[in-house]
Image 1 (cartoon, one colour):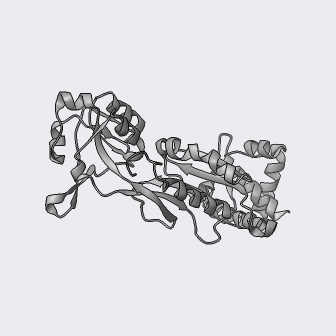
Image 2 (cartoon, one colour):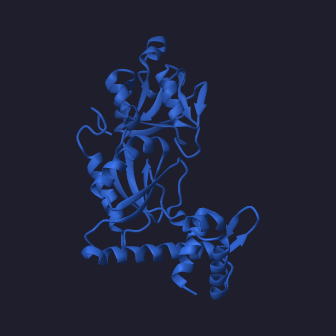
Length: 307
């Protein structure tokens, strides 16, 4: 049995979700993929996958082995890259993920520029508001916005993420402008209903109380789990929204939106690059993180305001 090929096959099947998909990607018949998996399981003496007519399910042993295989194959690819051209060439396949809205605006447009700098790197970009398990799903790097939970992942802060309460001028003409955060309770507020976001409410500092941060849960007739929808409702004059400047800065610059309660704005949280380990970090990942940090640090990248 070719152990390396068997490991590569196992990872491909786990990532693609079926023997048929892995076989198509390699250009072989599914029976060959099945024989490799059978030989690998027999060699290890454990069941890695439970195969049904509808899907594949990793066993606990299979999940642990998948993580080890992904790490070993990644280190092997890096070793090969280090040998080639004295280790100075950045090459390989980069798998990255980012939140959908932020990714569309602030990640995807940068990928072509990154590839012009590093033409031997190919890129797969996944845009999803789901928190992707980088190790289990084989991603090299994630861009994440907001406070990070405690984890074993390594993070690099790329930029600040500043948040403001904004509204369309028409809404403020009709309903008036709140003077303090507590006056939001008398306004129509557009609420992000996603379980993973704004769970504590909107954050504000209280200058009169030495900058103490408080959280207020505003109310309103409209809520949505999609931030893009809230942004469009806000532009339409349907209420106040608490949004990041990366999303609304162009509208603030153009006068389509107005920020309120600026004196109470909470300290920024962060925009981060997150990856599984700093040890043996592939050159392609280091190049991507450095590239993002340089782009996000350029004057004017976020509009007239700072992120």
